[in-house]
Length: 235
Ligand SMILES: Nc1ncnc2c1ncn2[C@@H]1O[C@H](COP(=O)(O)OP(=O)(O)OP(=O)(O)O)[C@@H](O)[C@H]1O
Image 1 (cartoon, rainbow, N blue to C red):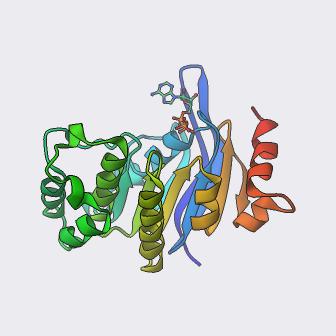
Image 2: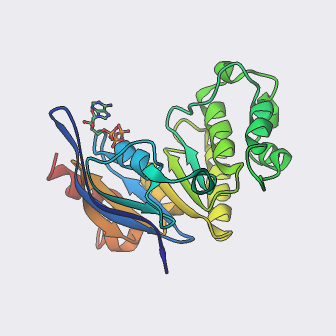
Protein backbone atom coordinates (compact mmCIF):
# COMPACT_ATOMS: atom_id res chain seq x y z
CA UNK A 1 0.00 0.00 0.00
CA UNK A 2 1.14 3.54 -0.63
CA UNK A 3 1.49 6.06 2.15
CA UNK A 4 -0.67 9.16 1.72
CA UNK A 5 0.45 10.92 4.89
CA UNK A 6 4.07 10.80 6.05
CA UNK A 7 5.25 12.49 9.25
CA UNK A 8 9.02 12.38 9.83
CA UNK A 9 10.88 13.47 12.96
CA UNK A 10 8.58 16.39 13.72
CA UNK A 11 9.74 18.70 16.50
CA UNK A 12 7.91 21.75 17.76
CA UNK A 13 8.21 23.97 20.81
CA UNK A 14 5.79 26.47 22.28
CA UNK A 15 8.03 28.53 24.57
CA UNK A 16 9.34 26.05 27.13
CA UNK A 17 6.88 23.28 26.11
CA UNK A 18 8.27 20.62 23.78
CA UNK A 19 4.94 19.72 22.10
CA UNK A 20 6.50 17.44 19.45
CA UNK A 21 9.73 15.62 20.17
CA UNK A 22 10.67 13.64 17.05
CA UNK A 23 7.26 12.32 16.00
CA UNK A 24 7.20 9.92 13.03
CA UNK A 25 4.32 7.89 11.59
CA UNK A 26 2.48 7.37 8.31
CA UNK A 27 -1.05 6.73 7.07
CA UNK A 28 -1.74 4.31 4.25
CA UNK A 29 -3.92 5.08 1.28
CA UNK A 30 -7.55 4.01 1.71
CA UNK A 31 -7.18 3.10 5.38
CA UNK A 32 -8.34 4.58 8.69
CA UNK A 33 -5.45 5.54 10.98
CA UNK A 34 -6.41 6.39 14.57
CA UNK A 35 -4.12 8.57 16.68
CA UNK A 36 -4.52 7.91 20.41
CA UNK A 37 -2.74 9.77 23.19
CA UNK A 38 -3.22 11.65 26.46
CA UNK A 39 -4.22 15.33 26.64
CA UNK A 40 -1.27 17.46 25.64
CA UNK A 41 0.54 14.62 23.81
CA UNK A 42 0.83 16.77 20.68
CA UNK A 43 -1.95 15.31 18.49
CA UNK A 44 -3.63 18.58 17.54
CA UNK A 45 -0.30 20.32 16.92
CA UNK A 46 0.81 17.51 14.60
CA UNK A 47 -2.55 17.27 12.78
CA UNK A 48 -2.54 21.03 12.22
CA UNK A 49 0.85 20.62 10.54
CA UNK A 50 -0.51 17.89 8.28
CA UNK A 51 -3.42 20.18 7.41
CA UNK A 52 -1.02 22.98 6.48
CA UNK A 53 -2.26 25.26 9.29
CA UNK A 54 0.96 25.25 11.31
CA UNK A 55 4.60 25.16 10.22
CA UNK A 56 6.87 22.62 11.95
CA UNK A 57 10.04 23.98 13.59
CA UNK A 58 11.86 20.81 12.49
CA UNK A 59 11.03 17.66 10.56
CA UNK A 60 8.92 16.93 7.56
CA UNK A 61 5.27 16.33 6.63
CA UNK A 62 4.07 15.02 3.27
CA UNK A 63 0.39 14.73 2.35
CA UNK A 64 -0.44 13.37 -1.11
CA UNK A 65 3.22 13.96 -1.94
CA UNK A 66 3.14 17.69 -1.04
CA UNK A 67 4.46 19.82 1.80
CA UNK A 68 1.11 21.03 3.24
CA UNK A 69 2.55 24.36 4.42
CA UNK A 70 3.47 25.38 0.86
CA UNK A 71 0.61 23.56 -0.88
CA UNK A 72 -1.57 25.29 -3.47
CA UNK A 73 -5.37 25.54 -3.64
CA UNK A 74 -5.63 22.38 -5.76
CA UNK A 75 -3.93 20.38 -2.99
CA UNK A 76 -6.05 21.95 -0.26
CA UNK A 77 -9.23 21.04 -2.16
CA UNK A 78 -8.21 17.38 -1.90
CA UNK A 79 -7.90 17.54 1.90
CA UNK A 80 -10.96 17.48 4.18
CA UNK A 81 -10.54 18.91 7.66
CA UNK A 82 -12.74 18.67 10.75
CA UNK A 83 -11.33 20.80 13.54
CA UNK A 84 -11.95 20.15 17.24
CA UNK A 85 -13.83 23.40 17.80
CA UNK A 86 -15.61 23.26 14.45
CA UNK A 87 -14.36 26.65 13.26
CA UNK A 88 -17.69 27.28 11.52
CA UNK A 89 -19.51 30.63 11.36
CA UNK A 90 -22.22 31.11 14.00
CA UNK A 91 -24.88 33.12 12.22
CA UNK A 92 -25.66 30.76 9.37
CA UNK A 93 -27.91 27.70 9.12
CA UNK A 94 -26.34 24.26 8.52
CA UNK A 95 -27.46 23.38 4.99
CA UNK A 96 -26.95 26.94 3.77
CA UNK A 97 -23.39 26.79 5.04
CA UNK A 98 -22.82 23.40 3.40
CA UNK A 99 -24.18 24.64 0.05
CA UNK A 100 -21.91 27.65 0.27
CA UNK A 101 -18.90 25.39 0.91
CA UNK A 102 -19.96 23.02 -1.90
CA UNK A 103 -19.76 25.88 -4.40
CA UNK A 104 -16.04 26.21 -3.70
CA UNK A 105 -15.30 22.77 -5.16
CA UNK A 106 -15.30 21.62 -8.79
CA UNK A 107 -16.99 18.33 -7.96
CA UNK A 108 -18.67 18.52 -4.55
CA UNK A 109 -20.64 15.86 -2.71
CA UNK A 110 -24.44 15.83 -2.86
CA UNK A 111 -25.35 18.21 0.01
CA UNK A 112 -28.91 16.88 0.36
CA UNK A 113 -27.58 13.34 0.74
CA UNK A 114 -25.02 14.44 3.36
CA UNK A 115 -27.68 16.40 5.27
CA UNK A 116 -29.98 13.37 5.27
CA UNK A 117 -27.18 10.97 6.16
CA UNK A 118 -26.04 12.95 9.19
CA UNK A 119 -29.56 13.83 10.40
CA UNK A 120 -28.85 17.53 9.89
CA UNK A 121 -32.38 18.15 8.57
CA UNK A 122 -33.73 17.76 12.12
CA UNK A 123 -32.04 20.99 13.22
CA UNK A 124 -31.55 22.80 9.93
CA UNK A 125 -33.69 25.80 10.96
CA UNK A 126 -31.33 26.60 13.84
CA UNK A 127 -28.28 28.82 13.40
CA UNK A 128 -24.88 27.25 14.04
CA UNK A 129 -24.27 29.14 17.29
CA UNK A 130 -27.47 27.72 18.83
CA UNK A 131 -26.79 24.09 17.94
CA UNK A 132 -25.86 21.56 20.60
CA UNK A 133 -22.25 20.35 20.66
CA UNK A 134 -23.17 17.07 18.97
CA UNK A 135 -25.22 18.79 16.29
CA UNK A 136 -22.34 21.12 15.53
CA UNK A 137 -20.00 18.10 15.28
CA UNK A 138 -22.24 16.60 12.62
CA UNK A 139 -22.20 19.78 10.55
CA UNK A 140 -18.41 20.00 10.95
CA UNK A 141 -18.08 16.44 9.64
CA UNK A 142 -20.36 17.23 6.69
CA UNK A 143 -18.22 20.32 5.97
CA UNK A 144 -15.10 18.12 5.92
CA UNK A 145 -16.75 15.73 3.46
CA UNK A 146 -18.46 18.20 1.14
CA UNK A 147 -15.43 18.63 -1.15
CA UNK A 148 -15.15 14.83 -1.64
CA UNK A 149 -11.59 14.82 -0.30
CA UNK A 150 -8.88 12.23 -0.97
CA UNK A 151 -7.57 12.66 2.59
CA UNK A 152 -9.72 13.38 5.62
CA UNK A 153 -8.41 14.64 8.98
CA UNK A 154 -10.92 14.28 11.80
CA UNK A 155 -10.08 15.64 15.25
CA UNK A 156 -12.21 13.70 17.78
CA UNK A 157 -15.14 13.30 15.36
CA UNK A 158 -17.54 11.59 17.77
CA UNK A 159 -16.75 13.51 20.98
CA UNK A 160 -20.07 14.55 22.51
CA UNK A 161 -22.24 12.54 20.12
CA UNK A 162 -25.09 10.34 21.36
CA UNK A 163 -24.82 6.59 20.61
CA UNK A 164 -27.00 6.71 17.48
CA UNK A 165 -25.11 9.63 16.00
CA UNK A 166 -21.80 7.97 16.88
CA UNK A 167 -22.82 4.76 15.12
CA UNK A 168 -23.93 6.76 12.06
CA UNK A 169 -20.63 8.67 11.97
CA UNK A 170 -18.63 5.44 12.26
CA UNK A 171 -20.60 3.97 9.34
CA UNK A 172 -20.00 7.07 7.27
CA UNK A 173 -16.27 7.03 8.03
CA UNK A 174 -16.03 3.36 7.04
CA UNK A 175 -17.90 3.99 3.79
CA UNK A 176 -15.65 6.96 3.08
CA UNK A 177 -12.60 4.76 3.66
CA UNK A 178 -14.08 2.00 1.47
CA UNK A 179 -14.47 4.56 -1.32
CA UNK A 180 -10.67 4.96 -1.26
CA UNK A 181 -10.26 7.97 1.04
CA UNK A 182 -7.35 8.04 3.51
CA UNK A 183 -8.78 8.89 6.94
CA UNK A 184 -6.79 10.09 9.96
CA UNK A 185 -8.79 10.28 13.19
CA UNK A 186 -7.66 11.52 16.59
CA UNK A 187 -9.64 9.99 19.41
CA UNK A 188 -9.71 9.29 23.15
CA UNK A 189 -12.07 6.35 22.63
CA UNK A 190 -10.68 2.81 22.59
CA UNK A 191 -13.99 1.61 21.22
CA UNK A 192 -13.69 4.05 18.33
CA UNK A 193 -10.15 2.90 17.55
CA UNK A 194 -11.15 -0.78 17.78
CA UNK A 195 -14.20 -0.36 15.57
CA UNK A 196 -12.73 1.95 12.97
CA UNK A 197 -8.99 1.78 12.73
CA UNK A 198 -6.95 -0.27 10.29
CA UNK A 199 -3.92 1.14 12.04
CA UNK A 200 -3.40 2.72 15.45
CA UNK A 201 -0.67 5.19 16.40
CA UNK A 202 -0.21 5.79 20.15
CA UNK A 203 1.53 9.05 21.04
CA UNK A 204 2.76 10.42 24.36
CA UNK A 205 4.90 13.46 25.19
CA UNK A 206 5.32 14.39 21.55
CA UNK A 207 6.56 10.97 20.38
CA UNK A 208 5.07 7.78 18.94
CA UNK A 209 5.22 5.02 21.55
CA UNK A 210 3.49 2.28 19.50
CA UNK A 211 1.93 1.76 16.08
CA UNK A 212 0.39 -1.07 14.09
CA UNK A 213 -2.98 -2.81 13.78
CA UNK A 214 -5.21 -2.85 16.88
CA UNK A 215 -4.16 -6.48 17.45
CA UNK A 216 -0.46 -5.62 17.13
CA UNK A 217 -0.63 -2.67 19.53
CA UNK A 218 -2.82 -4.59 22.00
CA UNK A 219 -0.58 -7.69 21.93
CA UNK A 220 -1.74 -10.16 24.56
CA UNK A 221 -3.75 -7.46 26.39
CA UNK A 222 -6.70 -5.28 25.43
CA UNK A 223 -5.99 -2.07 23.53
CA UNK A 224 -6.95 -0.13 26.67
CA UNK A 225 -4.53 -2.07 28.90
CA UNK A 226 -1.69 -1.65 26.42
CA UNK A 227 -2.47 2.05 26.06
CA UNK A 228 -2.18 2.61 29.81
CA UNK A 229 1.06 0.63 30.00
CA UNK A 230 2.55 2.54 27.05
CA UNK A 231 1.50 6.02 28.10
CA UNK A 232 1.91 5.70 31.88
CA UNK A 233 5.66 5.16 31.54
CA UNK A 234 6.18 8.48 29.79
CA UNK A 235 3.74 10.68 31.70
N1 LIG B 1 -0.65 27.72 20.91
C1 LIG B 1 -0.01 27.15 21.93
N2 LIG B 1 0.80 27.87 22.77
C2 LIG B 1 1.46 27.30 23.77
N3 LIG B 1 1.38 25.98 24.07
C3 LIG B 1 0.59 25.22 23.30
C4 LIG B 1 -0.16 25.76 22.19
N4 LIG B 1 -0.85 24.75 21.61
C5 LIG B 1 -0.56 23.64 22.32
N5 LIG B 1 0.30 23.92 23.32
C6 LIG B 1 0.88 22.93 24.27
O1 LIG B 1 1.52 21.92 23.50
C7 LIG B 1 1.25 20.63 24.05
C8 LIG B 1 0.57 19.77 23.01
O2 LIG B 1 -0.76 20.27 22.79
P1 LIG B 1 -1.78 19.63 21.73
O3 LIG B 1 -3.00 20.49 21.71
O4 LIG B 1 -1.07 19.42 20.46
O5 LIG B 1 -2.09 18.23 22.42
P2 LIG B 1 -3.25 17.17 22.12
O6 LIG B 1 -2.57 15.84 22.12
O7 LIG B 1 -4.01 17.56 20.92
O8 LIG B 1 -4.16 17.30 23.41
P3 LIG B 1 -5.78 17.04 23.61
O9 LIG B 1 -5.95 15.56 23.69
O10 LIG B 1 -6.02 17.68 24.93
O11 LIG B 1 -6.50 17.69 22.48
C9 LIG B 1 0.45 20.87 25.32
O12 LIG B 1 1.35 20.89 26.41
C10 LIG B 1 -0.18 22.25 25.10
O13 LIG B 1 -0.39 22.90 26.34
